[in-house]
Image (cartoon, rainbow, N blue to C red; front, side, top):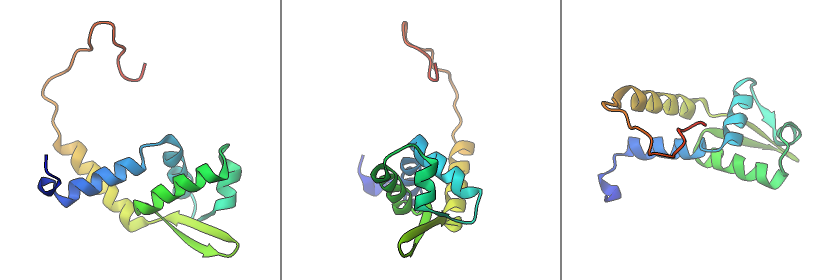
Length: 116
């Protein structure tokens, strides 16, 4: 399928989904949503991952526009980009409310159901 046929709203929904497609990034969003801001050092203490890994997760969320960072030397302060977060909520809400699943798909013999 040509990407020119994909509307911008679908591209943006996919970009937000990709950014939220890792449990650490979902956790970061939950942490940031419960406070006005958080410094990268505080996040590093909260998460049992290497700082370089944390940096990559923050970069992915920032590139998707879900968070924003402000340099307050020598630290970076992160917060949720409320405008883009509301747009993501709207797009996901639209996606989930408009997609109607008409049939069920039985698992293949011997295959586990998702979540097991």
